[in-house]
Length: 540
Image (cartoon, rainbow, N blue to C red):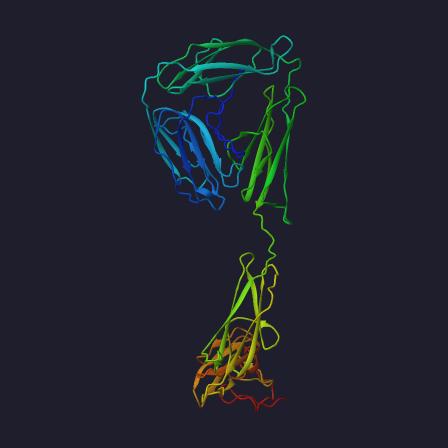
């Protein structure tokens, strides 16, 4: 039985690019072609469009330096199936800023005249596509490539290969570059060589080989001869293969920062030949070392192993989730305060001063800001604080972030003086509540709160109210309340000279209207809606 290994497109997270990986091309690559990527998913940041036939160094960089600041992964993949394009370069480089190479990868390839189509193979990145046109370079190459072959495998004392032998062909061309490599097993016709050839048919074998450069020069045919013998005991049992995921985990079992997948395979008969893995549905790649996955999100790794007798295990699967590493926030917020208002020559604030507190936290964010006026208890800061009482004052302030870090207490000190001959008397402000009431003085269905303010000197500037502890709002019309339950309305008024009244309070209870239409028990006498405030209602 004859097995010739195919060459899959490789996604390599270890930082090594796959570009004709099994054919060792030693020609000098004076030509460097560079692709770059950033956070975009619709186009490469930069890409070459023209090149010259022959050896080339391909550079693909998807890093912070090229504009990728989110850790997004991209690939540089050469199309090997679409008609109309060259299919002789198998290139599939996976790069991200957090991989082992920091997102920068290189590969050595040989380009032939024609067009290559390249694209990003990540789902959702289908618009990242382009063409590279390769033209024939100058000069006249009349020298054929250098080509050689090596045979590898387990050998017995007579030099025979036990179970199988693998032939690896290497070609190089220092002028125009290698275009094709071919091989023929025993009496078969020549076929393209794309990967090492594994022969496990018992008997004597000869592999012939040759190479042709891009100028059309073909080497002399070389050959290697060897013999494959059967193992002493036929191996029909596939290897045992397992995988373990390691790394730091959070309370939900997610891996923080990265996860490392270690695959272990063993075969007690012919021995393990290859171990392969696939990350998130990508093509299988050869497993050579533990796989580190740092991309946040859910991941699936499938894996399998093949022994030297050609038996392949069933595919195993392991699933896990990686979450971004969050640094602990131990730094309290930055908090400052500024005092504003009209000042006299002594720096005193005339009539009133307004204190504005500002807090900022670049890590977990600000949770609360508090202030204290003249040694009063700290209260929540929701708006600039205006002080119009004449005298010396101190406002202390502090802020707490989402991680529970509280800043040191800051303070500002200032003095407010009354305007000379000005208005120093705050407005008078009252509130009234109207609506239908039941026998227990509860308002039925709804209640309306009307606030009235007057100032006989500078005049009323604004009236404010707060319903049930909410932030103060400007009062412009009577406040209708229809939510059943106990309610408290606080209110205040400020005149045009900046004097603010003491805070007034009105409390009341609101109940739903009875479906029968009469909320009073038998024998009660309560006013009907619009006939009074219910104060004369007689309880039984």
